[in-house]
Image 1 (cartoon, helix red, strand yellow):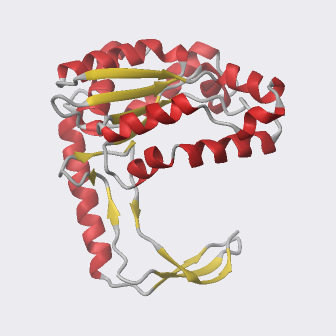
Image 2: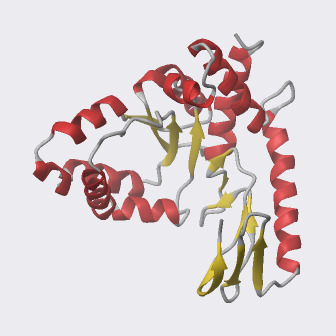
Length: 267
């Protein structure tokens, strides 16, 4: 068992709510998670209310049930999406609900499942919930993706370890990557975000026209950058000026390529 695990876990959840989502007083919070992470969801719900949330709505997404559905449901199911879920998605978008996605996935959850069924279900969900997804991708509301170990994920990463030891090992990696230590993680992330913004500013100052990638095993690839591109990284902002972290952890400095300027190969 990890030393100070309970303390670190509460710090991690607090980071997700206070810095990841940056929940505003009177704001509704939507949490999506696997059922086995009910304890994390309870901690997140408590922290969201402490931050001033108006209401916390929970959505349980079970991989085992999803797998059974993909394997056994009627063919027509994969080209349909329930109206009540569209109504819920539109409602959450229209009230500006902040969205926390707790990922705890089994890498083998869909092994042997017909990929065509998965593709069709994904397409109809995206099409039906267009308003919901556009608001997310446009940062009209705060959203955050955070990870929690599952037994299947941990034993996949740390093959050869006992299940409990594998889960502890994965938690240690997550805590380290998320800057959860004896200090205040919120302060740790303020410093990290400031550093990422500085790095993005440096990248923008170079005024690159193209980026050229090479490595020792054959990569030799040049990609152009879009007109008026901007390097960004770290935190995001809603139109109302609320700062949030879409991913915890994140080390990413990114920009947009020119889709018409790409030459070479990647190995």
